[in-house]
Image (cartoon, rainbow, N blue to C red; front, side):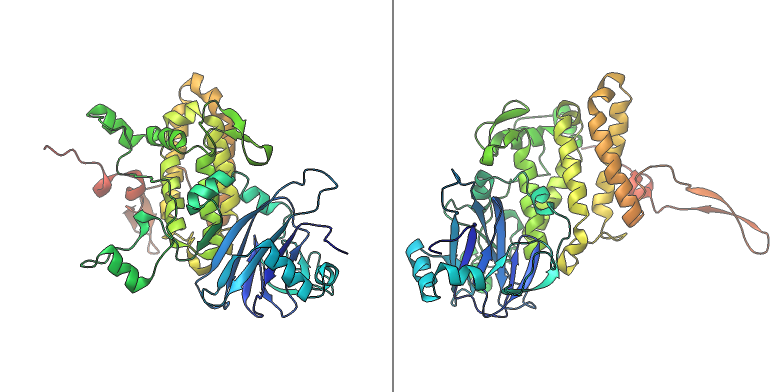
Length: 426
């Protein structure tokens, strides 16, 4: 065999017994492991860590294109281990081919040193499997594709700020999420905590959600309904080219580009980087996207298809929050208060829109998707997103005495009591 029959990823000089992950599956490498074969077309993410107990991880995105014809050779991606950086870096085709020859040629490497691509620990393993799976991240076929269906090469290039290689680590951060140390300059901070790769965040500023120059009522409406900021971001950062109609130009892999794909693509990248790398800055960006999209009203009427797709993706992501290490996605009563409050507010928004008969027909798809999310969080976390709760009543004690009981626990969510809005004279 002079070549290989399927798409492959070859990893040169990778040490044994380190943590390695491809998409949703992590495993520990063995001395025989040289890479992965049978890679499907599309985008993939591979990450490594010198130790399973070490929190810092490095990874890179890569794309397996569809071969132009059946006679075309399958693509091969080469990376080599850098002992200095303790991560995988780019290497040339020639260097990769020389490495293959030193290991006995393609036939030897393909049959004995490459593990088949899979997304569950038990599926597709054989006696020649060169990697020992340690964490089955998923058992559902197509789960990876569903979690990154809006990611494009243009979005990855903007996010990683590099058009040659899409690399990211646990320490990578957006500018607005960097820690500021009082009394130290930016150069001094880098000397203290090291150089961090800067990520291309969308620049969501939730403190200014109205157009420049807006005053009075327009600013008030922009603060309550963040639709202007959502529209501005979609027009400022299209996933490819200028965004126009709901179904627009072709994107990567022949997929149709739709309004809001850049938001969904950013949401997917950030969630997957939290899932695989435990990247804190990506978690903060994911939260900003939640706080932006779930506080819109006008856009729900105008862009109902986008909101339906957003809610569908949100449910897919929530189904995987238990896989995130370190408890970054804490959906307990305290940890989940942020998202729960947003979902309750969005439900009230849908109810207000439904009061207008003309608008109700246009958001049926949004309401259906929201009901799916609501049912899921109720079953999993016992979240009640409605406003119908008993806040006061008579309670009979053991001795028969009747006592008036009243709770104030929901005042924060209802914006009542001490949490009620206050008009201030300036």
